[in-house]
Image: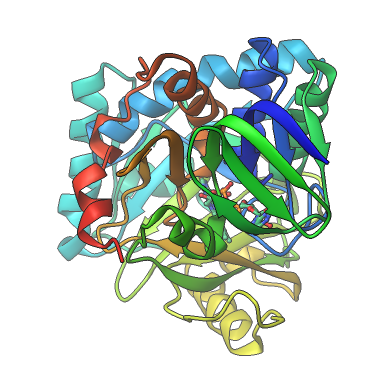
Length: 382
Ligand SMILES: Cc1cc2nc3c(=O)[nH]c(=O)nc-3n(C[C@H](O)[C@H](O)[C@H](O)COP(=O)(O)OP(=O)(O)OC[C@H]3O[C@@H](n4cnc5c(N)ncnc54)[C@H](O)[C@@H]3O)c2cc1C
C-alpha cells in the first residue's frame, strides 16, 4: 500500500520540522519522517539552548538571521509558547590575533544596519566583571542576541505542523529513496510517494542523498556542552547580567550561556575536532569536560564549580563551514538541506520557510544565495 503526499520531509531535526511546519501551514499536508523519536538526543537539535544572534563575521548570515527572527516570533504567536529570549550577546577576544574576527563582526553588523557597541578592556571589566580577559581584551556587544529553547523548538514545530495537517511518522528510518516523478520513499515500515522531497538528514545526510546521486564533503564531529555550578556570585550569571558569548581564541573558540533553567553556566568549545561515525553509540568525553573546565577556571573563575550534565551533540561540517541548501543537481523535485556546520539552529524557522518556498515556488526571498551550492554538490557527486 503506497500513500501519496505533496511533499515528504526526511528528518525531524530543527530544519525538517520547520520545513514541515511551513508546508503544513501553507496547506500542503506534508509527511515528516524521523528515524528516532521526536526531540531525541542523538542528532544536532537537542538541548536546553542554542545561541541566536545577528552577530556574524559575514553579512550574509547576519542578514539571514535578521530574516529568521520574525519566523521564530510567528511560531511563538502560533503556539503560545516563548521559545526565543533576547538578552544580548558578546563577541570577545583577549588575543590580538583574533581582533580581526571581532572587527569583522562589527563590520558585518554595521553593513546590515544592526545595533552594536564596541567595548575595550576597561569597559568589559566594568560591565562584565565575571570575565578575566586581561588588558588586551576587545568585545562587540549585540543587544539582538539571545537563546532559543532548542528541544522545545523542535517539539513545538512538529506539534504545530501536525496541527496544520502534517502526518508525522517517528521511529521510522528511511531505507531507500527512488527519485523520479513521483519520488518514492521506502522506510522500515512503509512506502510513500510524493511530488516533492526535502532531505534534512543531519549527520546522516550522505546516507540519504546517495540515492539522488550526490555526496557532500562533510565531516561529523562529536561536540560537547557542559554546565558549571557557580562557586560564588551565582546571581552575576543570570540572564540579565551575563550575555551569551562567543570567545574568539586560539586554539579553539569558546561559547556559552547564562543560567537559564538548569542551575549552571553552560559552556562549550566550537569544533572540538573529534570526528566520529554517527552510528556508533557515543558518550560525553571526560577529556572534553576537563578541557572546558580549565577554560572556565581561567576566564570565568566564579563560575568554575563542579561540572555537570555534559551532553554530546553532532556537528556536520562542510570544508568552508557554510550550509548547503539546494535542489539535487539532477532532480528538481528534491531539495537537500545540510545546515549544521555547528551554527544552523538559529536559522531553523527561516530555513524551514526557504525549504517550503523552494518546493512551492522554486525560489525564496530568504537570504540563502550564499549557500545555494548546486555546483559544489555536483562536484562531489558519485
Ligand atoms: C553542541 C552543539 C551546539 C550548537 N550550538 C548552536 C548555537 O548556539 N546556535 C546555532 O545556531 N546552532 C548551534 N548548533 C548547530 C545546530 O544545532 C544545528 O545546525 C542544527 O540543529 C542542525 O539541524 P538539522 O535539522 O540539520 O540536523 P538534525 O537535528 O541532526 O536533524 C536531522 C534528523 O534527520 C534524522 N534522520 C537521519 N537519517 C534518517 C533516516 N534515514 N530516516 C529518517 N530520519 C533520519 C535524524 O535522526 C535527525 O533527527 C549547535 C550544535 C551542537 C551539536
